[in-house]
Image (tube, rainbow, N blue to C red):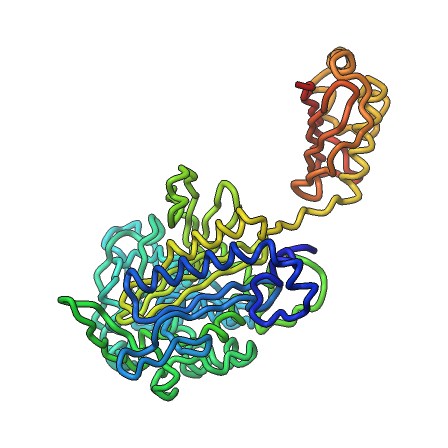
Length: 503
């Protein structure tokens, strides 16, 4: 399975040393030098005291660069081991923790949240037809709570006892649950409360034991002061022409929505783990959470919106269908297909992550300036990699059923008659177009294109029961599609031929 060209990996891998690998990469290295310059310019011109970004492919961190300083007093340079708070990019860790408890049989996503947070009993929008809040509603931000940036960011250190008092008091609703997406930090604080109540341990401890430790993320955690100041990026805001240090908020009840601190070297392990869930396949499932469960992060309640791309490629006019999954935003791009992404805005920090799962590539960036995540630069970098030919999308394999159907299609074209393969046709096939009409159409194709050798390009399966194909013919090309019926044995429900004459 080719997911990212090995020459590209060598080109951007800071530790690749073999002469042959360096030679193969030489033609592509300038592209990655250019991406470095873009991030460096962002850090310098925004400005941000410091920035680090990384590219993950083939299951590892293949490129990482830091710019600027992690603190303005000692002026320690940013390195791949500098610790940044990643704000709302924490939410994917919370979502996966909930899913792991579901896998263990300790909860259902369709359970009412009040089952595990009794203070929520009786909460509902004041209409008689308002549904109660389920766990899956919290995961996808459709529980009816108001958008709470930036209020939620300042609640990170709220003590659990105070959070419980808040829950007993109740909160106002913005809308009826399950009617629209509205982003809620409060909702993810509730999910963290559910993780703690169901697991019987603090949220922080559950994430550490279930995700961070198994992935080897030994520098990551929620209580930032547990690491020496020499390791930490200090958070700043720029105000009235001067830098001002933001207060360091300790861990508390709102940590599940945005309190995690990581290094680039650690976070790359998380990105590699997420990417490893694609494509579905046989083989050992060695991660701390099952691959199939990780893929559920891309599934939400799908209140889809049309949004422009982030970054300079927004000008292309390629609109994306975007929904909120579980801790990640999910977009369908006109060129790159499914893209998973999320930003992190926080007092003193900004961050962004972007994955193209079907190419096995991820980019992330951290800064230590309030709400400054360099998201546009990260997206520009991903599209630059694609333009350079670095994103390699694995083709769907040709299944035995599709291969047999393509052989049948060749026989039909060669004979000029579908009845030569009547046993391979589904019951609808000749009801939708008669054998006589097929003979007439095939005769016209033969007159226009002549004989077709049945090859030209490899087939392009769109699944295990469908494929597009292109054949070389005497006087042009023949495009086609074949679609199989859900029968045993499989049969052909639809076959289409389209001539592509020579210029």
